[in-house]
Image (cartoon, rainbow, N blue to C red; front, top):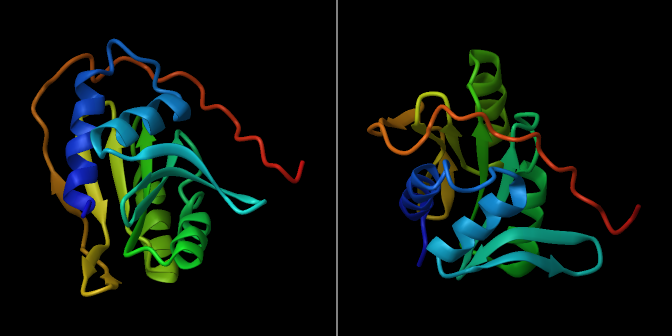
Length: 166
């Protein structure tokens, strides 16, 4: 069973590979799926797509996007598929306090935890903890990472997802 710790581990692998790979959403999805023995870009019905499905975990991936994106989609996919856990992964060049505040609000509103990888510092932040099927605010747990790869190399502009509805 994959959990948030496994997502953090997969993001560390992504950070180590950051100097060799493009940090666009499809690449991040592929790395996470590979690290978690899951699948990337899985259709869920006619209108939804899970960025990563790994066992009973779905992950929505956002690279340099608005901090509130991905939460509702992750919650819908979790509910539709009856999964144990859904989370959002935000990969950002630099995390500002206002972004973190919005992420915390989204976690509180949706019950979907978020893991943030800040490329400029190599920090991984986790908001929301999975406790017996419910998410509680974590107060901003942080795992400080050592210097690995080219953590300060700029990420490419994010790709816009194509929605089947147009």
